[in-house]
Image (cartoon, rainbow, N blue to C red; front, side, top):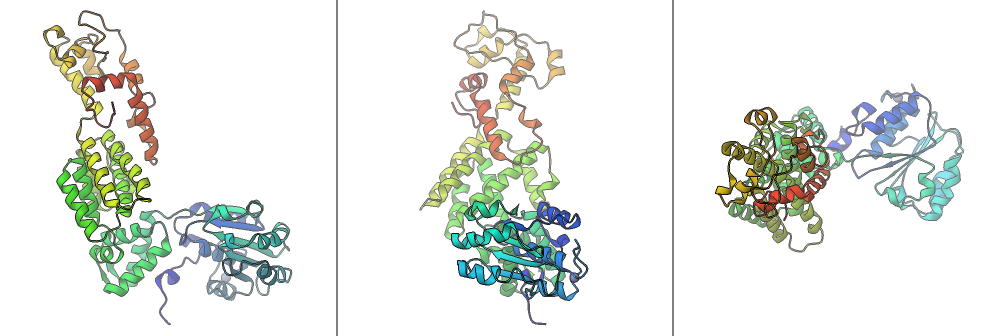
Length: 490
Ligand SMILES: [Zn+2]
């Protein structure tokens, strides 16, 4: 048998083989099982996420000699012909090159009324359907709405918003998602093992990162790297061929930012830039890395859903230990802002350097929560003592907090001291007796960050931080410390 590229050889043949599109698979299987077939389906999604694959599996499920069935046999003539794209009953049309009204007439309207040849259904699959002209779309409308009982339509597009509304409203729409890195890695590992390819975890991870959510791209990249290096593949091979940045470099930059090692940041960026690495992709990968750190901190340890290698987990553990939520959020915010600017920039290196240096500066200052804890401890040491003996605004402010016994504090840790405007009060005035709960409520207007169970959306955390910053009490603490509290602007 002649050589077949990996993406074709490993194209999923049944619903069970499809990776990363569970929501679509489930609906399609249910429709077949419950005999509730729509007359037309619209599959939307980026390239390489499985649109044609799903259309063919769906066609097999309907036209298998044992069908309609959710487990097509893949052995009968109908199944084999569909798999190879030769079935007379499954008409695959490329919408980009058959976009005129004549094409629609010739390929669809003139044939749709004839009964299927071998299967039970006649299935029209139109890829890149958004390329059809308006007239072509309009010519199709009536047939899609009221097709002959044996006809079904499957449309696919990478640009759903270009498909006219009148078509969309006549279809059941499925949005295929970009496939996650762990799912792509898993599939690449399976393929490599079966094909007898030796490839290390970092190399697989690099291939999966480079594919940007497309399984076909990942498989093509694996093919290419096998042609280039043979059957023994390392991370360096993959990075060299695809211009990616190594995992270690990304972790190195993150560490330099978190430890405010600015010379190291500049050296790392300089060497990556001069070796022609894609700085926009690097930014995206840094954002992903900081998100992992954030989740590690919030979950109080490694969360299996991150699906990382042992070496990555080890790094995560180290970096989470030297930072805090506010610092990571601030760095992430800087990087997301940078990502938006890089699209239009002619000098990405300068932008990247500035953003990282700014992040490094802000990552080094003290965490707000730590300060509050320190204040409590200080207060304990002073025993709520006489603040008038010192001119320090910190001590003055601490002295103004209501008296709480050591026992009370011990049973209430963490406990936050009441901080009042320093300038407006003297040591002799009594501070209002706010309870700990009130103070906490004031500081964290919403749930405390630690109680958020899911951190999928980093941006929502940034919004939360902004709300915390805007709180007058927090502002007060900031002014006490001359505006050096981590990530909080004066
Ligand atoms: Zn079959």
